[in-house]
Length: 375
Image (cartoon, rainbow, N blue to C red; front, top):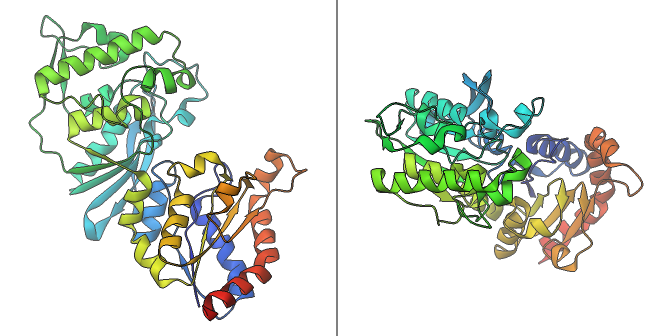
């Protein structure tokens, strides 16, 4: 009997690997004859790098970079040596969580640190970069990233401007570097365009401190107009171009990147479908299963794949919406947080709660495996 554990993280408490290892310990004790395949997943946000490193036997690389407010920091990215691939999360350099000790300052906030990470991976000889772009602190359309990679942003007097939103009104010309970029795939699970009522600024700007929507909207439009003229590239309307404050747009425009569903990208890279096909039972989950889960999140991708391949699928999550449409995707679904426990306490006790829920679920899981074997 083979069980595949393909769970996402429980945000704020357990990484995807922590979840997989906790469940594995319970299953090995309760089902000693079972073979366990640990396959942490992600959908392009935080945890993407760890999932890839675990699945592909990669390593962590540390490099010096900058946070979104230009403070020095050391950030990590993944390196898959046998494929010469780098796996980056923009949140490791330009993430909102890294600058939550400072007042939000979106006119100054920059993706330069993400560009420096990309540059480090290129210098290492990366033939392919996979970049997750969730959790950004920026609304600069990838301006800072492009400057770090060698793009020049000039004013009407052919002088370089500081590549931040506060100075973008001075932009008159963009000069590209003499660089050949490797293949870049961007894990993105939102479909917002760069501009407009559903764009980067109006939908995601407020959480980054944006209050003057017209200023940022006009600035990003100017960036897109000049880039279209000088670089011959205009992906502003492509779904996902507004992701991460327009970094989706910036990666397509300045690096020739391709945006792809985060779950589809990660599952392809880690050989998820083949691993599901070999398993008798699939276990998945995330911190909360709710309506958002149905819109491209990792657990629903796993469940749909399992259903298509005729496999039983079980979910463990911190909490689960009581939605028939959601629960219909799983043979069994368990919420680990007791109803009377506060979320803060549940986060602190997540590992114990998960192990307890898994132990309680063992009889039903054994029955499910028995049914699967008979069929």
